[in-house]
Image (cartoon, rainbow, N blue to C red; front, top):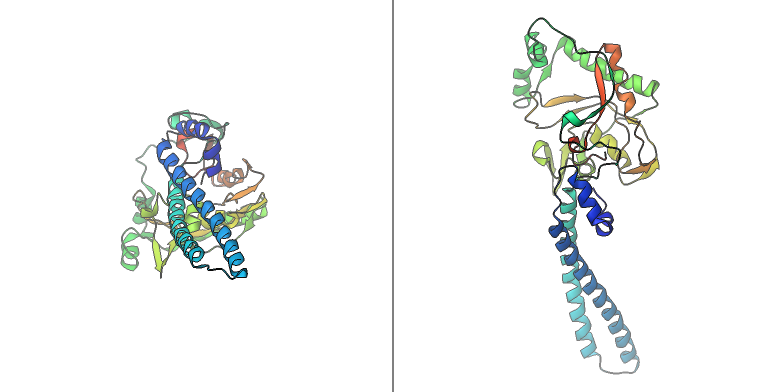
Length: 321
């Protein structure tokens, strides 16, 4: 979430930088919320001073044996108004938080400006696209044809668009998980972690799934609380360093991940890639190399890849490009 102090001190600059991402900032809405907050806080501070003054006068009057009924009545009125103001301030701060949660992060000056994938800057590539002289099948069709990707049974067990892996494909899923964990912990300095599959709302806000993508999440209610099934391993791993200032960290965990994304035929996705510790505030502030080792094992599988610097508009709202 963007720092509200940055908006308060550099509003014009923030609005201009957000515009490069194609993000419109509701300046009037923000200024109205800020004016309301300031008005409430100013009145609250004045009443607190008045209450302290009344308390002093009441103590002095009692010491002199004077009647304090009038002063007590004034103090009671101030206290009632203070209670009302506290509720109003909490509501204003909640609405400000919800407003800020919708504001994208600011792009770094090094990120290229553009309007789409054509403006991405390729940094390097490995391998060339494979040419096939036959119609290439979708991986889901291949798995179903082999009898190893079973949507019918997944639907029977859990619901539509869940999937059951069978035989060699289930073994491959497990083997790839183990391979990636071993490579990145043994060769690239990551610390392996085993993380919860259920997280709280604060964690979902920390990685940007809330509030925008709540409709794509699976929710587990528990009393007045909401827990969420993780949509990617990045959510619990990144939140290890949420709200903390720490040396550059490199955590790596393997999880299954669930989301109700209409783009995925298989809702249950294996989220097995290494995730660097990039949640919260950390030192150094911008370690731009800490994701690079993620892709280094791909040539071992003869998998081609490209590394590109994505333009301003290609980043998600919660990305810190």
